Every structure is written in structure tokens, then in C-alpha cells.
Image 1 (tube, rainbow, N blue to C red):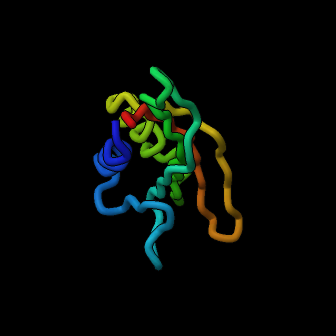
Image 2 (tube, rainbow, N blue to C red; image 1 turned 90 degrees about the horizontal axis):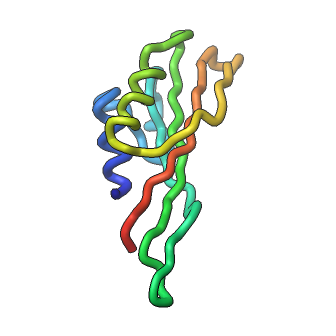
Length: 110
């Protein structure tokens, strides 16, 4: 897998409103921000790394409580065979935005 697999799965849910690391200035909810955070595991063979497991986050920002995008993101990740877990759900009072965060993991060739 590659990082593009994560991006493409999310673009299938919300085309044109998926951002890498930081949302565009003036982005209006709903939108998705995703980022790779680092390595969460690895596999070694013959004295070298042969697989690297990358970990990152996906954040959905929406003004709609019980937004169907929540389920759509999870279905898209499952369909793309991207491992994930729901990490947190928050309501940001200052912006009146619901913020859902997932942690994902993908194996990558080195």
C-alpha cells in the first residue's frame, strides 16, 4: 500500500474537500484532514527492514450531528483494506463543529 491509497479512499467520500496535514484557509465544514504521523511497526528479514507500518490520523470536521460521512469514511477504509480505529469524538464549542478522529495503519514496502 501507499499513502495515496489513504488519500484516494477519502476522496471517494468527499471529493474536493480532503486535505493533507492542514485544511485550506477558509475551508467550510464538512471536510477531511488526513496525515501520516510516523512508523508504528516494522518487519525485518536478512538484516534489513522489508515492511514498514505507517500510522496516521484522519479527522472529519462537520456541523451535522450523526453525519452519514462518519459511516462512509469507515466503509471506504474497509473497502480499501486500510486498518483503522476510532480514536476520539469531540464537539468544538467555539466553532460548533463535530470532530471525529481515526487512527489508521498501512503496511508499506521499503
